[in-house]
Amino acid sequence: MIRYSLKCTDGHAFDSWFQSADAFDALAAKGLVTCAACGSDRVEKALMAPKVGSLAVPASDIEKKIAALRRKVESEATYVGGRFAEEARAIHGTQGDKAIYGEANAAEVKSLLEDGVPIAPLPFLPKSKAN
Image 1 (cartoon, rainbow, N blue to C red):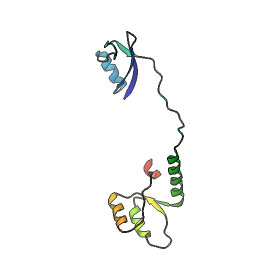
Image 2: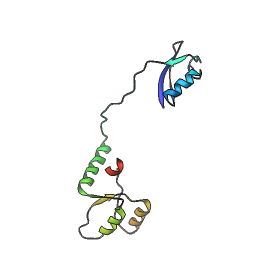
Image 3: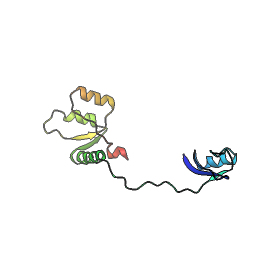
Image 4: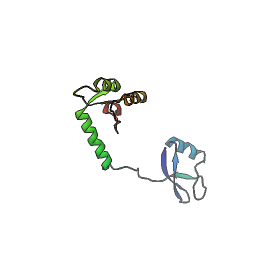
């Protein structure tokens, strides 16, 4: 989708959304783009500046806390990927439990919880999944 600032030959200015730049050109050529104020089909694109967001958006408090949690998990736990359920069962109840993180499907999560294996969801995707 693309938004254009438009104006008619009578000077009325308005904005409208189009599927693409080509869609605007095709509709305008057929006289199907009309002025919102007067109905004229003599409409052209007006001079407009692109909307550019700022490069640096300050992180919210919750984003900062999630980032800190991610750093802690990644520095203190071992990533086991899709073997999470298998690895969690293998280390559950052993002395010297090690911290792990990874992925598990809903059935695996339910089974682990039913068997008393302590697990918790993380509020982020592992880096290997996020990329």
